[in-house]
Each structure stands twice: as structure tokens, then as C-alpha cells.
Length: 85
Image (cartoon, rainbow, N blue to C red; front, side):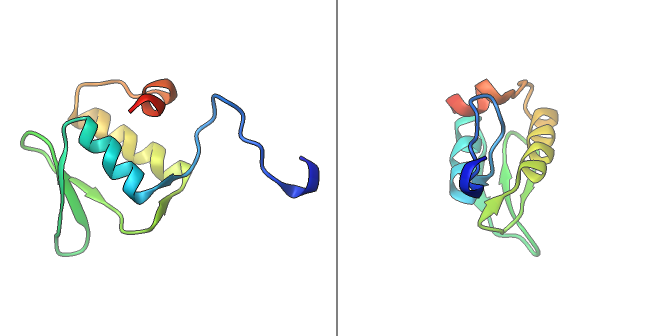
């Protein structure tokens, strides 16, 4: 890496802004976000997904939440699918 800049190659996960994460969940059929006690949440048919309030999701946090989404919605979300949402 020259000059300390990060070059993300095609095919790697990247951090995701909160609003972008919400937009992509809506494309998967989620509604919300709705205010809760501690976290906001998004709701697909009968389930509930807690959404952290930080402005950007780190890659590990994003992967964890995508796995949770996959348990709720019967769709496999790989990097290619995520980038097309």
C-alpha cells in the first residue's frame, strides 16, 4: 500500500454506512427502522432485527448482521448479492 492508503480490491467486504445498510435491508423486504428501548429495529414478516445506532458498520459487524438476516429471510447473501442490493 503506497502512502498508507487502503486499496479495496473488487471482491472484498467493506464497511457500510448506517443509511446504506437500512436501504439494502428494505430491498430484502424489511420495514422500519422502528424505535425501541435500546436499539432501533427492522421487521420482516414476524421477526425482528436489532440495528446498532453507530454511523458505520465495520466489516465484522456487517458480517454478523448479514448472518442474522440470512436466518430471518431465506436468502443467501454473499458479497455479489450484497453489492447488487
